[in-house]
Image (cartoon, rainbow, N blue to C red):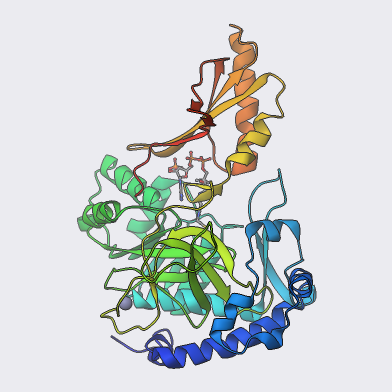
Length: 437
Ligand code: COA
Ligand code: ZN
């Protein structure tokens, strides 16, 4: 292993006892900081606790959980713990049907974020001589700017290609000698299919050697297929925008779980129903406390991602815990094309149309070689054969849905009574036919 600013053995291989001491010190600072935000000020008052109650890491259990709903309810600034003039950026979730979530950052937060991403990229072998191409959406998607600043920090030549336009992505890969690509797994497969259509063999005709894949659940088989197709190593990336985005956890060259950076975060795995800690090695919901953030520290944030901590030590020598491949969610959030979508967003749009009944069905599927798709079938109260009218309505529903969820679903209007949305007594609204786990 070569040493640099972005492989920091002192931090990455720190003995666990020492890591825990560092965590306690940072947790105490975080708790003192977070009560400056209206949400935590109120929460601490209600619970009758104060920052001084945190004397050991076990005292974490005394602290409140934080949820996405809290972020929505206290939209937009209720969890920001510094004056707004000290913030230099925010990221926000999509959607206009309810309050989105907002995450604020100071310049120091952005620097620490870039350092975390740089650490991940360095870990998988990225070096200044590499050319890094990012196919994530820029703008509000945290994987855009998140990878951008991390890759620049490593010193790589960075190509902010952004999402879509696959032919251009491939041209860039060839012309600029791209060696590292960040893409969500289904999009990596799409790039490969288009390369094949173009008669391009990524093993012979490109300099690609590393892919960073994340933001979408995928199986080990999917990863292996991507690695074989491109002739590269594909490393799993775990990010969550409420924490910052990419850089939270990443696979090391051993490819056996994602190291979650415990100098940035305290990790818990809980039973999502009882909210009690899961037994060591058991699957549960990942809960994260930020301990290295100024603008918006979050205590015990319920990510809703289901995973477990892998037992044992990693042969790479890093002492930071490893989370297993994700096994799903403890809520109904859909992840499609790297975009997070809640079925309620779709329902709310559909219910704006008086022509539609309340029955609808969302189907998610992979159609190769095009990629992943969402179909929204919805029943029309009075279906008639007026093709123009049906087409106009379909177009308008599609437009409004795209505005809300950022992807373009295929909308199908069907006569009343056609959708078998009831499975025994419970309405089935989402059918996921993709092979994710
Ligand atoms: N990343 C990059 N490009 C993607 C993509 C993804 N996750 N999913 C699809 N695309 C490509 C498609 O292949 C298509 O390429 P083409 O121009 O060669 O035909 C193009 O984007 C448009 O896709 P399409 O499926 O027709 O459009 P859409 O309206 O349904 O989706 C996207 C819109 C692609 C812009 C939207 O899914 C997106 O921004 N995804 C990226 C999300 C992201 O970066 N997440 C990271 C997590 S923070
Ligand atoms: Zn490791």
